[in-house]
Amino acid sequence: MLVASVLGGVLLTAGCATFAEQPPADSWQPQEQLTPQGGPEPQVPGQNKPEEEGAGGGNAPTEIPPPDGCTDYNPTVIGTCLDTVTAVAALPGDGNDPTALVGERRSGRILRVKHGAEPEVIATVPVDGSTDGGLTGLALSPTYTEDQLIFAYVTTASDNRVVRIAPGDVPKPVITGIPRGATNNRGALALDRTGALLLATGDTGNPQAAGDLNSLAGKILRFDASGQPAQGNPTKGSLVIASGLRAPGGVCTSVNGPGAWVTDRAATQDVLYRIEPGKQMSSPAWTWPDRPGVAGCASTITGVLVVMSTAGNAQRLPLASDGSFSGKPEITLDKTAGFGLLGGVDAINDQVAVAGTVNKDGGAPVSSDDRAFVIAVAGGGGSGGPD
Image (tube, rainbow, N blue to C red; front, side, top):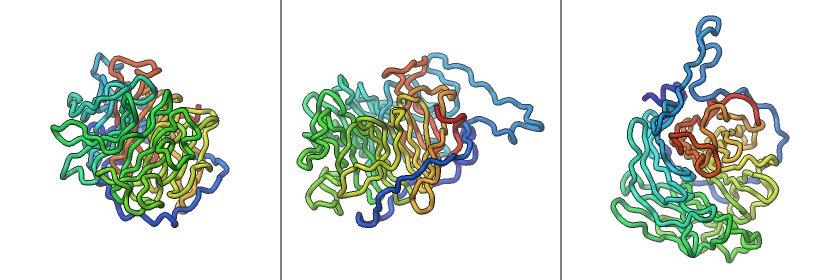
């Protein structure tokens, strides 16, 4: 309850995510190109708004002590002393006691984290983290509460692949032979609203592969729990539903809305694409010419949250009722929050998500890094404007 109380009543109301039937592919429309507009002033998680600071605004927010070894006094932190948390899968819940699985990119360890408990290693997947790959994607089975199955996207010495992990068992390959290269090996996993798995793959340093439909590199793949093409894919018998990626950092679908999104570090800018089955991703829904290092994303019916591994902030793009963006990205968590570089994120529900830090991979780690922590999805939770 401590974490939820810090984020306020915003985090206490929503229930478990459900996956309604996905609309047909031909109902997904291209994202309109919009002119950025000013968004509302955001707030940092745990930061009192002026009207909440007492009469006359005289009560200053309580200062959080710095970490002491693996002890972190920030009440939003639910896991400490991890290593490069690129992959996060939030466990089902109502947000009152956030729990998640987190994946360490270079070690291949998958750990369960929650506030007040030591991180628990539940599986270790053999990985090759010598490039930018390793363990970079995590997703739960659509029937996780019954079967406890976990899916992971990993880099090995010979390929990139999806593996399935059952309780007490060794990882079993589900999709193998995805090309690997000297760079752009990382990918991202998520469930769509039908219970199919979505995988975003990098182009492994070969831009031509992203446009080659005979290659699994630089693609969005959609498949079932056995690794077979999911029903409703644009091309029957094919895993590929979209192409044109370079170095994806996150893929996400709304827990209660129609959108599906993928972040990508394109050749000249960072971008967010709306996933449109059957099409090449060539027209971004949003671009960041300043290259903040787009990483994981979380989506709701009212916005898309993207965490950044270079700028070290979280930005939320507000969505209008027609699915277009209603303003420029809002900084909902900035550098002053003290988390540093951010990697994976996954929504528990439409108000709260779990995010991970990647400070041990090019950042300035503190003693409790890397960490998993709770972050607000639907506005609130940051201060200041864009960097």
